[in-house]
Image: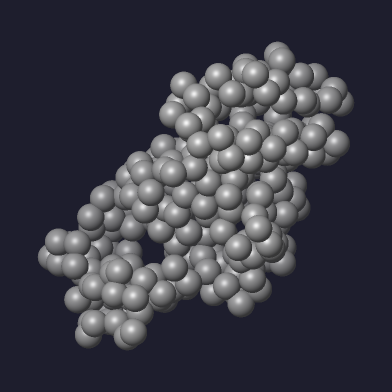
Length: 280
């Protein structure tokens, strides 16, 4: 199939983009890499009257670094992250996650911000950035607000980015030298959508020990205090091992334990992520 007829606009600023989006009351769509929206257009799952191409807005491809954070413009591509072009040597987990996403052709075009805004439950960036404690910076062209990535996704393909707003950037805290990270994605084969995702991030200097269960039927399940499923707080250098009984209780309470097969896959992903974190 082919998409319905639409117009395309290429604004030069966030303010211009927001102005274009505002009057269309949901009939306009933002496009960047197009790796998710493109197929939806061809299948007519999305039928916008206007596409707003934001790739020409300079601040959306900018990378800013400070002592405490690295901020990625929303149009930074996954390949930029994979190839180390964002200057985040102390965040090697970003390149690790990027290199496992889909295929190289997709990574060359697909953007980090686009993945977050598409809000596919099986996508990597939502789970990984939630685990890292990242924030999303959202703008309507005049004002900015910050939303923790852990709360950005409201449900499958639904986010807290309102009509007329654009995801401008993702601000990621820099880890301390002793931080540990584990990430596991369970797929039928490399490049396919995930059946389960587990992420574990421990940074004792910041008092941070988080686990995230991704590839659910909706938003990732964020466990801010992962000691509850890993047998208590862990010191640097100690092993990290999943308490399956505790994890089962938590998943069940969150409504994620009804499907026995998916439940086992989630436990497997968490367990492997924990082992990877313990070895890092």
